[in-house]
Image 1 (spheres, rainbow, N blue to C red):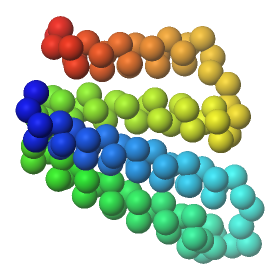
Image 2 (image 1 turned 30 degrees about the vertical axis):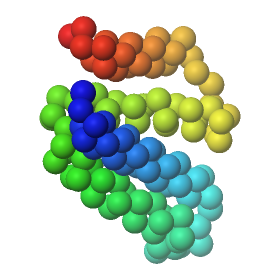
Image 3 (image 1 turned 90 degrees about the horizontal axis):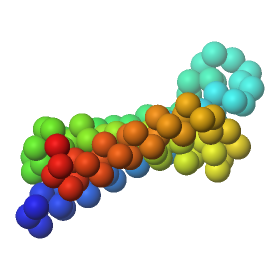
Length: 118
């Protein structure tokens, strides 16, 4: 894999990570009480989260200039890993055996694709 593809893959991974952080912000906002429906959607956490989503989308657009479409979907799957880690560390969620198996299969798929075994 060439250096430029690696750089674009890094952009894609950064975009997925930023998107995952945005999801955490939205969940934190959803867990809080709000005085009105307007304040529920126009509070700092939600506004920042949507701004991050826009940034993540721009990073994805840039990344797809230098990576194959098939690689992009594999890199997007890392979002499941990020969201699971954030859920466990920030929200103290539990990983059930089903969730653990699903996460392991996702990681295994990423590893197989990365090694060129597919």
